[in-house]
Image 1 (cartoon, rainbow, N blue to C red):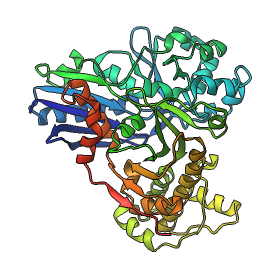
Image 2: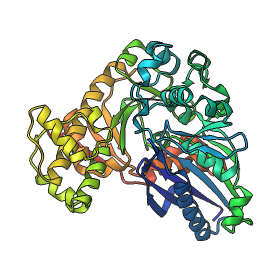
Image 3: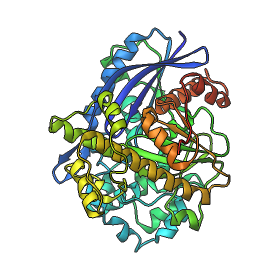
Length: 476
């Protein structure tokens, strides 16, 4: 075996270490470890446990290295977007990353728009306005802790922070930068206008690179800690934003296809050759996030499986059924049309009890409240399909081509009910898979950096060879 790839795939609720290699034009993957994680209340704010996450990653890395005899090993990290940590001028972590669900930025957009209008920000960035975006996080921090931002050395987004801890290099790829609402997709640099108008500390923003470059070798300290100083281990700057890696792994994305990347968040959109920054796109709150090799992911963020994840946490506390093996069967017989919720309603952002929040929404909208876990699951699944159809209808007015099929990737693509209800709601065929799209994209980008994948045009074919694509056709 000549080359092995280690992918760290970190979502907002769990992370994984995956060992992979490419054999017979397919990606062969083995999950080395899984680790749940969550944000913690520290003082008055919600923070990510960056040290705990990194320790879990090192545990997986150590096991993966021991399991492979490859003479070359590379590492790629993908995470969620917008959140970041601060390094001191000497390279120490001086601020653990805030979690985007911390409410400190809920009123910040209104304050920011008094200094630079929402329309101007959209013209500069083409990014959907959400109070969790990095622009509002950095503005709020700079306002509340000006001494800290003045003396800090560098701001690194989550994937970049882990890359730094692995190899000591401070860098950011354009896919991650574009989630910040501080990146200009036309100049492909940080927006000087926004930084100047909001008086943001420009010295904190890291150097930018396109996805698909080598950052450096594993740091000597970590190599010594893991007893692998004799191994050739390189860290790659892939598409650090998990959705960018996932979309890069779509087996076929012909013109006319809409993608749905289904996880904690659902991201719905198209792959466009260039940004679509128009008054109509701004009015409908669409984002132009950067993909690989100069492409644009023109999309909308919608709250996804977060509702179900939070329900399962509560059911576990209440000692109710939480296993998907049981719920997937029971939900098929649960009554349809109990109620439809708006997944993006603020009341679902971070409630203490998600099932009760759903019931409150039902009461407020004169709908029947779900009673059993299976009924809640049915409500969530139907509500997502309903939301997907609304986004599709919006997207049809903005896309430069007719949309006639849907490709669903990510964890949600494993739900046959979700895929079928989406086909029924939209009237379009749904092609589901790979469920491991993010990890697949991560690995394929590493293979491109290593030279094992010499032409990126072959990546969709390898991805298709590596999974089973299921087709769902409208039944109603």
